[in-house]
Length: 240
Ligand code: ATP
Image (cartoon, rainbow, N blue to C red; front, side, top):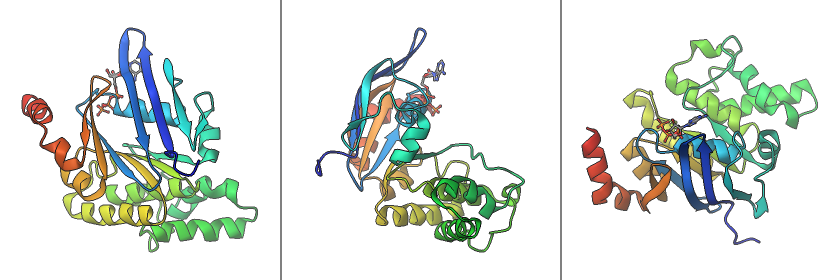
């Protein structure tokens, strides 16, 4: 159905032994939307990404992608279906160059080596690493590593990208450039779910924000509505 949300998380609960990491969470992500997941440490944000990407099978509930139930699908199947993710701690092959790292992600989509290299260079260019093609990953700054992560994810030609703290640990002056990059990816038709702590980044990027606490949706709405919600303010003041 054309009007169905791209992603539907339907009443997901995820238990690890006695710990309830996600508690009956439902959310929809519409085509072209940027949704931000917020919340304190241990709120269940990363576990939600794991469940969407297929790393964990939820204790109960369903995941639908393009209207199709993918709850039982393995992570590689979800990747081929168009779900990609980036990690809070970037995990490139340190010795490989920027181009080579992207080639690993792009490989299933190309037959010839020359074509694969050319496409990978284009993805590097897309994320602003066009002048770092031969630099080994270990020689990149944190912001550049985040860009490389994005290029590796984009090389799998996703429809949905799960981004875990794309600005986390990045120096202040590199953040505006990353925000512009994410905007350009959305412009290209990508749908995005962000885990993000930086309120300015959320304000600049997200159409909607969901504030999670103890595995459940506590508050949601526009970034402004969430940031000014008394319960959210109290929780953050309580943490400080
Ligand atoms: P952070 O911002 O610190 O990454 P988060 O919101 O991503 O926090 P999660 O990492 O999803 O939170 O964790 C939610 C809860 O689930 C925590 O209590 C965590 O200890 C627990 N948890 C997550 N993964 C596992 C696991 N594999 N086994 C046991 N408990 C887990």
